[in-house]
Every structure is written in structure tokens, then in C-alpha cells.
Image (cartoon, rainbow, N blue to C red; front, top):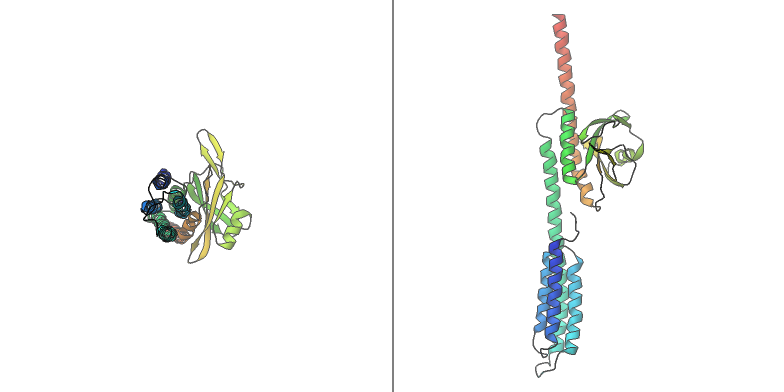
Length: 288
């Protein structure tokens, strides 16, 4: 998932900075010996509710610096004898608390990523239900992948001898080649390695077509599809815009490769069986 800062993240950073500023302001007027600096714990704690891993550590280190500044600038008092020891323990506690918050954010992000992948796989699997024809199945699978990956266009090819044959897709432009050589271009490497790839500003036959004209694809995602672990085809998705690189996009192509490949193989076998039955029926009628 995208870890770009959100409006909530910025508000939390502002609140954390505000707590730190309020605390150091109070320390300048409150005599030593009063635990005003405990408010720094709140500044570190609220970073749990944002998504940047470095934020808790930065707040903890900033709090340690302000803790030392407050110790040197706060008015002296008769209760300040143990203030240095208390503040030293507090500084260490800030850092330990920040590391704990970092671990919690990592666990939350890992769970969110796993949920996103599972939802994406479920969406694609649902689109493969029933007994559709190969073209219908390919169209449904690519629409689902395009929706999940924010792609504008997508195509699904199957291996047929030494060629990749176009089966179907989503928002396919007119004039798209019906077949491609297996051992040429980036798709050849994807088929050989069996691993998805993300390409930037690469030449592609895929274009985004609307009633107003055509637009180039600036980002492409290529991934193999497999059946029983054997590569049987390839998917290609394209975007007109540029989005931040996310490893989860390639992970989704990996987990969907087998369900799409198995469903495509089943649909092709079913289509061949129907064609064979129709031919047998035609020959039987001719004999009669």
C-alpha cells in the first residue's frame, strides 16, 4: 500500500509538535522537580496513529533534546536534586517507547498489505466464476485487475506455440496486434523468468483510447499467468499517469497468476470440447 502522508498524518505531526512546544514552554517557567516533561510521552504516543515509520523516532529524539534544554533553562528549586536522574530515565524511555510504536506501525502496515492482497485476489477469483468463454473470461479478469491496480488498459495473452495470442482485455485500443513473438521484447523476458515486471516510459503497443483520441501508456505492469506452475500466457496493464512504485502491485500479479491461468486453460479446453461436439454433431447429421 501507498505510504504517502495523508491529511490525518499531518494533523498528528502538528499535534505532536504542539505538545512538544507546549511542554518546553512550561518547562521554562515551572521550577525543576515538577514532572512537566512527562507530556513528551504523549507526543511520542500519538505518532502511533500515523503511518510514517521514522516519525516516532524523530519525535523521541526531539523530546530528548528538549528534555536537556529544559533541564538547563528551567528555574531551580529545592526539589531538583533528582531531576537529572529522572530526566535521564525519561529520555531512555522515550526512545524505547518510540521503537515500540515503530514495531506497532510495521505490524499494522503488514496486516493492511496482506488484507489488500487478499481482497485483490478475491476480486479476481470472483470475476473468474462460472463457465465463460475464453474472451469473456479474459475481459472479466483484466477489468478486475485494472480496477485493483488503477490501470487504464489491460490485455491478456495466451501461449500458442511460438506466439502470444491476444485473448481479451479491458479498454483495448483498436489496431492492437492479435499476436506477438514469444522470444522478443520485455514480454519474452517475463515469460522466460516467470516473474512480473514494472516498466517506466517503455515502448508498448498498448495505448489508451477515448473518443477524443489516444494517449501513451507511461507505466506498464507485465506478469506471467500459470497453470500448475507452467507459464501459459501473460498479462499487460498500462497507465497514462505515473504513480509511486509499490511492490504490492507485483505481488498481486504473482498471487493471481495461477487462478487466472487455471481458469483460462479450463475455458480453452471447454471451448475445444464444445467445438469438437459441434463438429461431431454436424458429421452425424450429414451421415443421416
